[in-house]
Amino acid sequence: MSGTVHHTGFATDTLLVALSGQYAVSVPPPAIGTYLAHFMAAPAVDQSWNGTGSYSYDRHQMSRCKVTNTAK
Image 1 (spheres, rainbow, N blue to C red):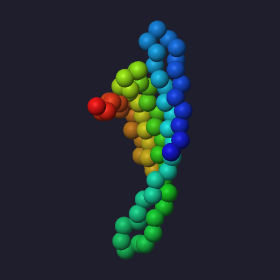
Image 2 (cartoon, helix red, strand yellow):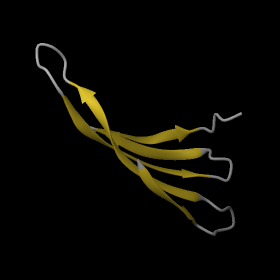
Image 3 (cartoon, rainbow, N blue to C red):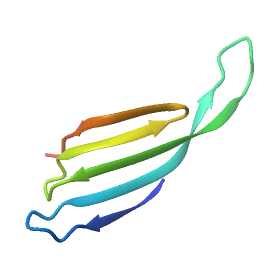
């Protein structure tokens, strides 16, 4: 996985994040094997890492997703 974080520098500094990577997917029986699927995420978050974003994995796309910091 790799990515970047950019600060907008506006009145309320928003972090624009871009992540991409791959993950292994196992093929269900009766087939045998695995393949690499692609993952990409693009959230826009505040300084507490809360906000909204979109992501895609394999051939699926999700948008307007809530991003919540769960770190304690």
